[in-house]
Length: 626
Image (cartoon, rainbow, N blue to C red):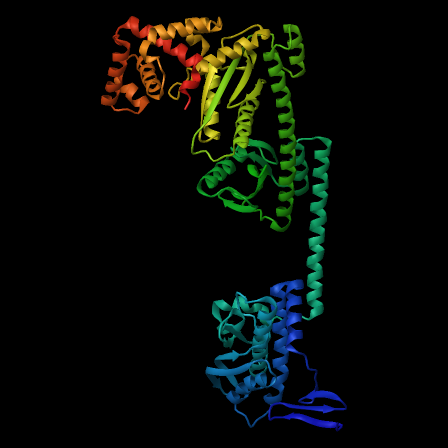
C-alpha cells in the first residue's frame, strides 16, 4: 500500500491513509462499527440511566457537529443558507443517517440571524436501529447523537444556541425520524425540557457534582441508619411505640403521630391534643374523599403539610404514621421519607409483637375457660386461684354470653380467616374497654365468660348491644345472635351458665338479636331439669297435627305461628318480619287453624302455643337453622 492513499475525495469529506493511519479532513480518525455504539448505548443506560445517557450522547453529537462546521464556516464562497445545507450532507457522508431538509425559514439582518426554523427527516438512523436491536422500541425519540450533531453544527455557524428536536423517531417504530430546529429562545415552553442539551459542564465538573450528591446521600443514609438502629434497640428492649416516637422527635425535631385505622391517636410526640385537633379533622376529611393511602405521600392541608405512610400488619392497613409541618416549614422529603418508612416498619413490628402476645394470652384464657366448663376443677377456690394468674377476679357474679354467627351467601372471605377475624374483633372490643374476659371459640359461635366487675358502667344487656354493633360495623355479611345466661355466683357451675346462654340464643332472631335467659321464665326452669321427654310430650300435645310428620312446609307454618304469637297477633308486623303479604299471611294462619282446631285469638290457647313453640325452638333448634 502506498504511504499516502486517498480512500474518499469529496468536496465536503476527504478520507485518506497516511503512514497506515486513517485521516478524515486532516483529522486523525478511527472507524467504529455501529454495533459497538449500540453496546455502549445499552451499557450507559443500564449504568447511568436514560437521562444521563441522553445528555452524554447529545454532547458527543454536539462536538461532532461543531467540528464539522469548521470546514465550512470560513468558506466565503458559500451563502449562509448553503453552509447550513451542507450539514445534512456531511452527516450522511459519515454514515449517521440519510438526511434531508424538507422546509426552512431563515431571516438574516446583515450578519445577524433574526429567525431560524428548519424541518427535515432522517432515514436509516444508525442510532435508532441500534436502540431497537439492543433495547427494543422506545417510548420517546432516541437519536440524541443526531440531534446533538445538528444542534452543534448550526449553533457554531450562527454563534447562538440552536436546538434540534425529534418530533417522531424510527426508534419508536416510526417510518422515519422527523426533526425540527429552533433557537433555544424560540422553543417557548418546550425550552425547559431541552435545557439538558446545551449544558456543557466538563466531565470533571459533573463528577464533582455527582460526588457531592453521593456524599449528601451517604450522610443522609448514615443518619437514617443510625435512627433505625436506635429504633430497633427500642424493640429489642421491649419498649413501646411512645419511646420510639420520643427518639424520632428528638432526632428530627418534628411532631410525629401514630393513629389506628379508626383515627384514634395511639401515640404522639411534639404536639399536644389541642394543637393536633385541626390536623386530625382535616386528615379525616381527606381520607373520606380519597382512596386509602397505600404509599408514603405528602398531603397539603390548611393547617400545614403532612407526610404520611401506612402501617401494615398481615397485609392490611391498620394505621398511619405521620410527620407534621407548619405552613412555614418545608418538608425535606429526601430524608424524611426514608425515616418515616423505617418508623412505619418499627410500628408494624411492635403491633405484631403486641398482637402475638394478645393472641397467646387469649388462647391461654380460652383453654382455661374450656377447662372450667368441662368440670376439670372441682373447687371454686382452685379456679379463682388460677384466674388470679390472668388478672381475673372470679369471686363475684359472672355471665356467660353465647354468641352465634351465620355467614351470608355474599361473604367471600375464607372460612378460617373469617373465624379468626371474628375472634380478634371480639377480643379487641373488650381490650379497648379494658375489660378482662374469657373467650372460647367453637364452630360458628363464641363463648364469653364476663365477670360482673368487668362491665364498668354498662349492664350486661347494654354491653352486648355495644358488642353486636361493633361486630356489625367491622364484620360484613355475617349475622350475629346473642344469648345471655343468668347472673351466676358459683364459678364451678359455669357449664350450667353455658347451657343457659345456649338456650337463650336459640330464641334470638334478626328482629331481636339478644335474648336473656331470664326472659325464658318457666321454660328455662323446665329445660334446666333436662326432662326432654316431658317437654316433647308437651310439644306434641299442644301442637298436635302441626308437629306430626314435620317437613319444610310445616316448619314454615310453625315459624309463621311463632312470629304471629310473639307479635301479639299483629298481622302487619308479622307480615313484615316474614316478608309476606297480608293475604299470604292470612292464608297460612287459616291452614294453621285447620291443623290445630283451635282459636289463635284465645289468650289461653296462644299462651300455651307460644310456650310449646319456644321449647321446640330450644330443644330442636336445628330444624329452624337456614
